[in-house]
Length: 153
Ligand code: 4NP
Image (cartoon, rainbow, N blue to C red; front, side):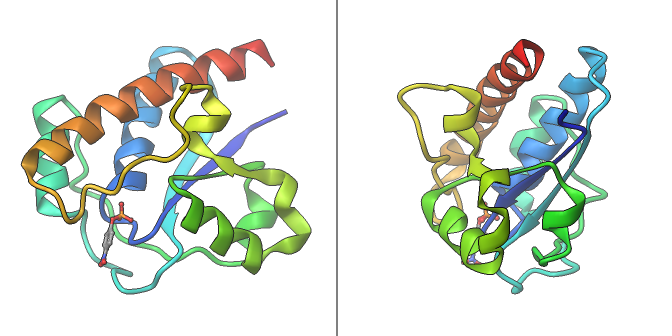
């Protein structure tokens, strides 16, 4: 049974905090009692707030990222979380290198959720504001599919 999910990206200031916020809201609406959190494989933004461009796009769609603080993935996370969902293949590779004993708990977010044919969640960091707005839509699509899969068992 999946009771705790960790969303993982590179910096933990754009994609995974967004997906965490969307999942927290949608899981509550769906009465799914699943703990969610996010972190990054990299440590550059530990303690930092979410990217301002991501906060703006998320807020426009009703998701607040104000309280987010960047955190780096650690080996202990693989014991606490039942499912660790990577945003892209580089994240997944780094996660699996860190915890080769827990590969079965790791997957690509959009792939596991079943958002065919998408596998990776594009990184908006080097894009314009439209990339951040697109990220919100994709996060909503991904979380909706995730809920379907979780419900299907
Ligand atoms: P994220 O985006 O992995 O979605 O949080 C990025 C954040 C920071 C950097 C790259 C991507 N960076 O190069 O600092």
